[in-house]
Length: 114
Image (cartoon, rainbow, N blue to C red):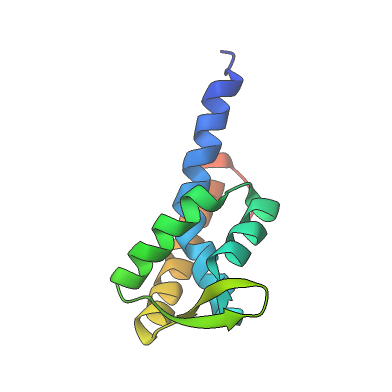
């Protein structure tokens, strides 16, 4: 059975969306950052762009996983920098654990060594 590139593309988008929050949490665990910087890094790494990041950042702030602060810049508008909250650190650890379990299960189904 031949898979169309459209089906494969749709599957890739869903896989990326499923891992996006984990990726953002992991990035913020290293240092605070602003949404455009996060978006640019994710665009380069996994092909996810701005339109996905901004709603995610708002939801994560609403859920209490990130805190933000405005920082004035000399070359344009203020930037909103995000950091992990205590709940964000807990969420990161939960998602890392869930990710490892998921990857192990998929690898097992695929017959891949761990």
